[in-house]
Amino acid sequence: MINNAYLQDLKHKEDELALQYLPAVKAMAFRLKERLPSSVDFSDLSAIGTEELIKLARRYDEKLNNSFWGYAKKRVYGAMLDYLRSLDILSRASRKLVKAIDYAVQEYMLTHDEEPSDEELADILDESIEKVHEARIASNIYTVMPLHDQLQVGDEGAALVQIEKEELIGVIKKVLSSYKEREQMIIQLYYFEELTLKEISDILDITESRISQIHKSVIQKIKESIGA
Image (cartoon, rainbow, N blue to C red; front, side, top):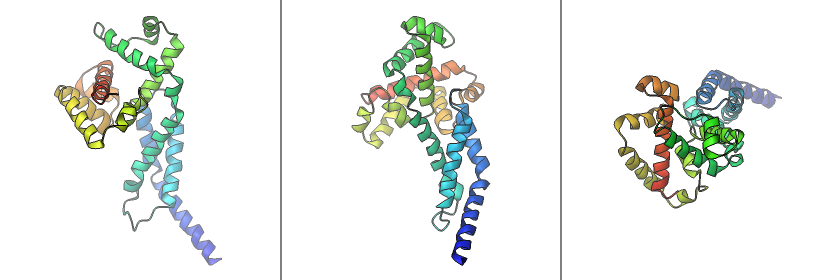
């Protein structure tokens, strides 16, 4: 009986700990949602994060780590990314079409100040608007994923198997050094500060389309450098 009461009290304290950081999880989900297409629901991200937070609170040992949020933050964010991976949306869109779209967008922007619409891309590539729309959603979801995930798109990660982590870091640094300081700043703000394209646009006074183009260009150069 006493043991039962102790366990109930312990569970209550663990859930109280989770509730304390629930606003932080919702804020994290909101920030991630801002960088994703409308097809991904904020409530799904928030629910996934909350579920992970509760699990972490129930197995948290303050003797091993004196900061719960420091312990939980990366794991909660990782759970949200795992959810995005589980959507497996890129398998439903043609990977070949995603690459064709990226190339068509780059060509289009050589003579225009903005990205082409789905309708224009469908006409350029002789594909249905629905297929183009689905492929662009898949591509947009992957832009918020870690670089490691993005580099696997196209060759199923075969090239990454052949390269060590330190070598990959060296390749990324070399590719970034070939860009102007302003363009390097875009990558810094997007991946490390986790700003949205709109926020970066406001800071650097550059269009969101141009930011997207630079981002895709960097990813493509890294892929080429590792043979992906």
